[in-house]
Structures are given as C-alpha cells and as structure tokens.
Amino acid sequence: MEIDVFTLFPEAFGWFERQRHVTNAIARGSRLSYVNYRDHTPLGAGQVDDTPFGGGAGMLIRVDVVDAAIRAHYGRDPLEVRKERRVIALTPGGRLLDDAFVDELAREHRLTLLSGRYEGFDQRVLDHFATDELSIGRYVLAGGELAAMVVCDAVIRKLPGALGHEDSTLEESFSEALAGAPEYPHYSRPAEYRGWIVPEVLLSGHHGLISQWRADQSRLRGARAREAPTEPADLPVADHTGGPLP
Ligand code: ADE
Image (cartoon, rainbow, N blue to C red; front, side, top):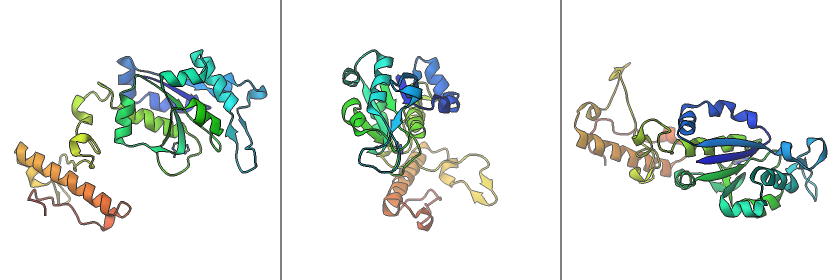
C-alpha cells in the first residue's frame, strides 16, 4: 500500500510513523509519503490560502495550490491522477469513516489523502481533484492532519502483517465476523481483583461455550449501543456469569 498525504504539516506525522503497526507495514513494503502544499505553491511568500468570495470567516486552501502540489508530485494533471487512484479529501461533512469504509480503503494499492486547514478547501478541489470526501466524525477539527492519521492508522492495521498477529483484525469490533457489532469484553489476569471476578465461562476451557458467550456479549453490546448510543452508563450490565442471555 502506498499512501501519499498532502498537508501543510508533514512533521505532525513523526510520532505516527514510529508506531509498531506502521513500521511493520513499511518493513513489508508499504510506503507513506508527505507532500507539503507550501513547497509547490505558485504564489509568492509561500501563500497557500485565501479569503472566501462572498465573505465569511476563515481562509480556504486555494484550488491552484492543490493543483500545483498534485501535479508536482505525480507529474500529471490532477484530473488524470484521480482516474488512477482514490484521492480522498478530509472534510467534516464527508462520508463517515466506519469499518466497512476502512476495509474498502485497505483493498486499494494506492491512496492519496488531502488534508485541509483553516475553513477547508475551495469547493473546486472537492469537485474536480478528489474522488471521495471522508469525515472521521461530525465535528470540526482545526485541520485534516489528525483525520488523515486516523484513516492511515485504521487502514494500515488491516494490512497483512501490520499487527504481527494475523487474527487480530478478523474478530474485532464492527467486523463482518461479529455482524458489525462491537467486540465482546476481554479479561486477563488476575482472575479476581478487588472482588471483581472474570466471567466463569472464560476460565472453563470450553471453547464452544466461550464462543457462544462472546457472540452473545457482542450482540448485546450492539443492541445496547443502538438503544442509547450516548448514555452507556444507564444501560443494564452484561451477564457475566456465562449463563444464557434473555
Ligand atoms: N477536517 C476538519 N474536521 C474534519 C473531520 N471531522 N473529519 C475529516 N476531516 C476534517
């Protein structure tokens, strides 16, 4: 997988690049690179943004600046580039990122992420250069860098060998294996801590019962999240005995 991130702050990705799943993916041939819009701007004094026509707060990343950066990096007109690869603009109003979208992106061999700053992009960037608009949630970040990192993180951990444990992403929250539901609870040693005990079934060594309990818990969590997504504290506590669920 090759991911190119267009950004005004390539240095923001330093910490992210040192994460184990990222170094694993890079060791297995993936590549992450950064293009700074400012390095390619056709305007003077490193200008990349401008005020919106019609007035209003904030500044927009200019369409000619994005054009120049994409053109310089790929050596082609951005209109051609978007025929060859997904060019994803990070915007608060874009398609919401979820596990299915992450899977879709992880199947691509090449991705381009366009991070915005200020009030976002001139609309012509989205209309003509991007293939997709992607949002990591319905709130507004000061810039697309964190959103780009979220996308890279979620996609890269799905690549073969990135987690060092091939099964890790198969049966996780929102996966097909769990029918899109959140993952079941996990416990580790000690089996009892301050009187809080691990569900008996998990200590039973009975794989069939454990699988059944996990599937039930996952479904229950999914149902509870659908009922009251913002009020988890008020919901009934999961059955931890390993007994059948209602
Ligand atoms: N840029 C600013 N806010 C964003 C969001 N919520 N998702 C993606 N990109 C963004």
